[in-house]
Amino acid sequence: MNLKYYTNHFGLITLKEIELMTEKKLKELGFRREDVSDDESNNGYDYYYYCLELTEGFSLISCGNDELVHSKDNWYVYNFDWPNIKITKADHIHKLKEIIACSQQN
Image 1 (tube, rainbow, N blue to C red):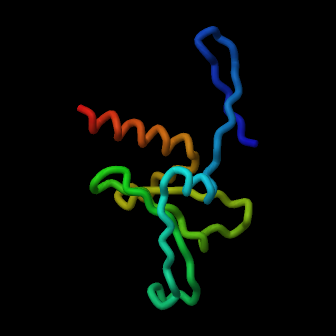
Image 2 (image 1 turned 30 degrees about the vertical axis):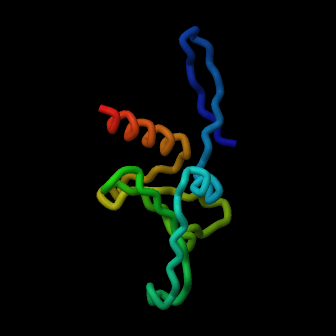
């Protein structure tokens, strides 16, 4: 369990569980699975990743299942234009979706 501590407006400390990215969570967030065969990649094996278009011209892509070395490794997503920014928490994707939705209303 990954917990984060918050101080509320009364000064009390509360705990909130931070949801790490899992394959199940990617699906729940609306990510679409993309299968890549060895014939397409010529890397010696099949693999898959997930993709989500948040708005026209802005998508998130996950790491490939072949990049998860251990069963304990967590998925992450990124944007091709910002490859050094990796989103590892499901909450952050929810927030990003909210920001994009608000900006499109204006």
